Image (cartoon, rainbow, N blue to C red; front, side, top):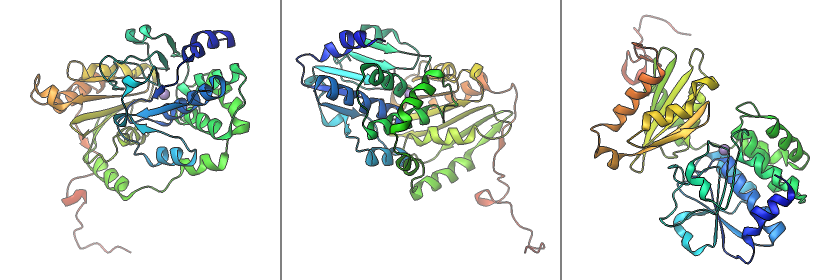
Length: 355
Ligand SMILES: [Mn+2]
C-alpha cells in the first residue's frame, strides 16, 4: 500500500473523530497486542488522536504479561467500556464474526487489519487490509510505519518485532520475505535486553501443575497426539502446550483442549503446511462451535451450553472428528506416560538397588 493510499483510505477515517477504539482478538497473543499498539502509535503520530486498546478474555501467559508491562502497552478489558461510544472501531489480527472477537450487536469495525483467511463480513469495513501472505499482522503495521515515514519509538519497534518473532516462531513458521524485511527494518530500534526478559519470564507454579496434568492425559494415536488440560487458568496456555507437544518425534498432528468459563477451547498444530490446521479446526468444530487459523496452527472454541442443545457430548464429538480427520485409521491409543502404577509412576519391585 502506498503512502497516498494509506492517507486516503485509512487515515482519512479519523478525520474529525476523537473516540477511537482498537480491539485485539480474544485472549490476545503478542501479534495482536503489538499490532494494536503499533496502530495506536500511527494514529497518534500522524493524526494526533489518542486511541484506546481493548481486549476480551485474559492476558495470562507470562511472556505476554511481561511484554505489556515492560513495553508500557495500555490495554483495558473490553467489558469495561461501551464500544458503541466510539466513532471508529478497528480490529487487528482477527476479523468480525469469526468467534475470535466479540463485539456487541450493531457494532461493526470500520477498520480490519489481519493475516488470516478473508471472511466475507470483513468486506463491509471501510478499510480492510488482509494479507494471507504474511506471517504476522505486525508486519503489515510495520510496513505502514515505514511507508508513512514515521519515526520509530524504541518500545513500539520492540513490540512489533516481538509480535513478528513470536507469531512466526523466529521467522520460521509461515514467514515470508515481507516478515524478514519488516524485522530488519525494526531491528536497529529494538531493545534487545527487553526482548530477552519478555521471552524468559518467571513462570507461575500453576504452569507446572498444568503441564503435569496435560502430559499425564496425553495419548498417542499413530502420528497424532491428543491431550486435555485439566485446569486452564490461562486459556492461551492450550496453544502453548500444543506448541510443545507437536515438537515430539514422530508426531505430525496435535490436538490440545480444555474447559474455561463454560467454553471448550482447543488448539491444533500440524507439522506440515499441507496438513491444513485451519481447515481441520473448522471441520471438527463445525455446527457446535467455531474454529480456524493458519496452515500449521489453528484454534477454536465451543460454547458448551449451546452445543449441548444439539449434541450429547461436545468433547467426545471434537475428539472423534479429530481422529477421523487427522489420525491413521484404526490407530490404537497409547498413553504418553505409562499408567501402570498410581499417579502414572511405574512401581518399583523393591528388589532393585538404585544408586
Ligand atoms: Mn497473528
